[in-house]
Amino acid sequence: MSDIATHPAEDQIDRQKKAELLSNVVEHIDIKSFDARPIVDAMGKMSFTSRDLARATRIYNQMLEDEDCSVILVVAGSTSAGGCMDLYADLVKHNMVDAIVATGATIVDMDFFEGLGHKHYQALEIPDDKVLRSLYIDRIYDTYIDEEALQDTDHTIADIANSLDPKPYSSRAFIREMGKYLSENGKKDNSLVKLAYEHDVPIFCPAFVDSSAGFGLVKHQVDRMKAGKDYMVLDAIADFRELTDIKIKAGTTGLLMIGGGVPKNFAQDTVVCAEILGHEDVEMHKYAVQITVADVRDGACSSSTLQEACSWGKVDTALEQMVYAEATSVLPLLASDAYHRGHWKTRAKRAFGKMFE
Image 1 (tube, helix red, strand yellow):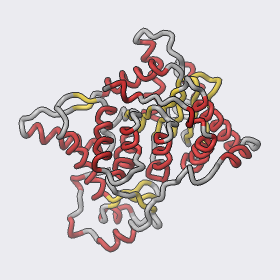
Image 2 (image 1 turned 90 degrees about the horizontal axis):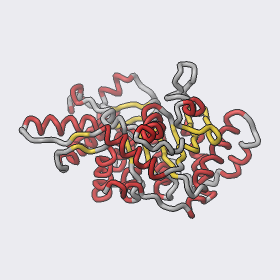
Image 3 (image 1 turned 30 degrees about the vertical axis):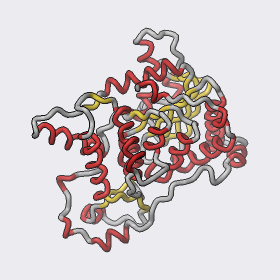
Image 4 (image 1 turned 30 degrees about the horizontal axis):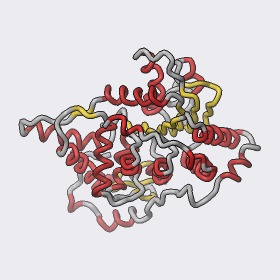
């Protein structure tokens, strides 16, 4: 994540060493290029995580097959940087999700970043992180990001903010402007942010400024304050209200959750919020799948197990499945299986983004 204050001097960066480290581009998996149905079917006859994944895949297919069900994709963690970016884009492109709740890093530092033409790189070696800092390279486990490219993203976010009327925006409204920008100026067709804009799939980031967007928006605000001008702000309450409006309109809903934390809790809490607003007949999320490596023993599991969420009135327990696995290793199987079973071909397009025009 960007840190302008500790930028190494331009002439102190070893450009040759940096180029060597940033030489192996992460290639995002294409779920259309292989058919995972046979292996998922076979895993369903096994035990442990294999059987959990097979059941989770069946539940996701039920979401897509249920003509009344709207699907909310929930993403936390770094799976986009790790090779699942095109997977998420394909879910939008092929009408397999209807709304998205994600971390700011997923949307900005990873997808919007690549939409501008930048790349993520495989770390073939892990040198001392102080060496990486001297080269202006950021590390996500075994993945590298060029910090100079990331700062280009920060400044682009500031430029978008500067172009808008100085008023409150939900993260959904601001991300829509980011999608519009990529549609007009982007370097990558298969961008989640761009495709979500074009397909009217709203994206919410309840902790939006906890990402490169934060630096760009702070710059926007400080520059406007210095100039004595008004500035745009993000309205977190509008985020909650708008996603709750989607839940109320959708009725039957299913959650496909990668990771957990704030995005997971935010998506689940819409049921309780709808009740607070007087919609006592609102349904709990009927379907729910979570892929996570989080544990339950600290009382969290990255924002509770799905069965625990039932006690809060958020998720029904009949059609839920926890999959305890690192998501990049199992999500491509689930998504490929669902793509090739083809229930998305007959789904009605929700276009929830049009609700806010």
